[in-house]
Length: 525
Image (cartoon, rainbow, N blue to C red):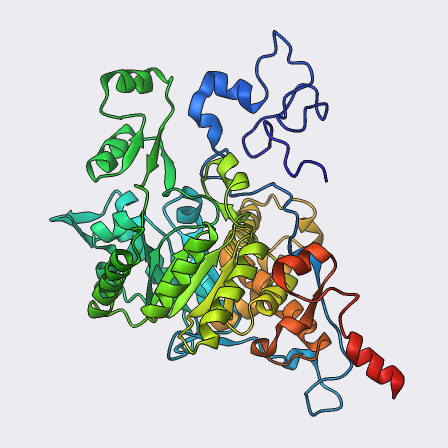
């Protein structure tokens, strides 16, 4: 097996190598590093921009996902097809396959499509497109989670005695969903890291904004440190530092202020402090239970937990704590997914990729379930983009999974929708879009339906709706092909592996061993 990832160059960091592909596999350096090269590669960029070279660019205009070619991913599984099934009808339509799910201990969170857009926090890209994403989730009947640090980043927030009492940006985001929700389907949740917790964001969102659920955050798949964004205002950098955030370089330092004034420093990085759970189980358990009880006392009907792709013992800790506290939903985010701003090398080189973490999650959940212990509803996230990813996720984690998390792909659909809407307004529709027409009603497949049912909403929301309808149709087709007429009926027996390594990791049957006994019975009949 060759290198899984060649370092030192990527479009994500705006770098390349002078000799193209003639590089050393381990270092990614050109086979001859030439004196006189201005520094095209990541090493070269680091020589003049230092830590700026760590992050994907341009911030606020892109999302980024890991480039590493993991040894086993979802392509190593195929979905079974069958001419037999438990359905009583001789014939049926794939459109009758039910993809609705319910989440929470009482099943009170209803989803028309089993998708949640997870953790859209304080990055510029999330702020720019949230009106589309919030209204899109509402009209699709799916879930959306407001991510970390939104209130603190809001320049117009009011913070009284250390607690948020008003945040127009949070109000705007909640309103985008609540104003378009229909028939009780879908939900909007608010997430909090340690900074949000300290600023009282969750109680404020419950009491004033009507959050359907709250989510404690232990981590995410794209990185194993706290959240970060870039700031172009020194005044904002100073304000956030005074709120307790880590800001690099120090905006109150005289040399930094002069460098910013001269244009040498273009901006600042805002980081949250790193969350740490005590090693001692008793101490960690007590603190976690106290936090959960505090939220329930504050009016939270549904409490979620989100964890990242930490080491297996930490995954086990998240599942066990969620069981003890009877958490409603546990979101597990594998490495390889997307982000608005995470360190590029970290995104590629840390943690458990999605298939691997899914395999361990099933193992740990089954162990608890076999002992009669409570298992929370599971949401799997991490680089999922298509209907087969949804199906395979449900198969790998059956019967514990209730939805998948899709954020980067959802943002992509909303961004494209908004881009096309602007192009139509400017009379500059690009090819190949212009092949479908010059107006939104001509270009967007679901434009008229969405307008008739939901009124005037952003074209980004129409883009999200169109993408989710494609996923819904494709998922129903895959389900009908394997004679599964409810997404909750999908089992681990509905996929097989194409490689022995995938079988070793997940316990799913290898293709050449699949149905062996059944086939022999048919042949010997």
